[in-house]
Image (tube, rainbow, N blue to C red; front, side, top):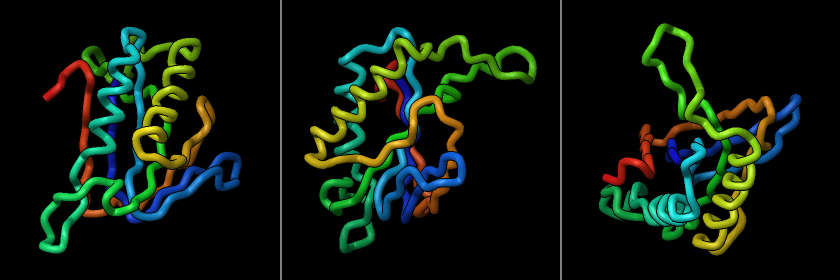
Length: 150
């Protein structure tokens, strides 16, 4: 399971010309799921996400997490995080889990983040053609892969 986390001033998801969800200051999280991912990956990544200290404290040091700043979180599924570009110029997505696996895992990840945050998170719509808009704050962009726990 992979997360691409962006610290944002604001973010929104639009589907068919209508805003589906939006947040203010907080985190936009793109989630990619593989067939081999488990409940352990969900719990570990949700914990890392909620405790990631990438917001400035009073001294301007990235020392606060999203809970501490009372920030918002938006979680959007994105199978292209598992793109393989090893051969040629057309990405292959063979490592991305199909909908039968990835939809329930995505929904479980959202629930786990909500539980750890103690509040609802905004989402995209699984499988939809979404337009994601954001103002990246910093910019701060973090990549976390549960297969490479650094």
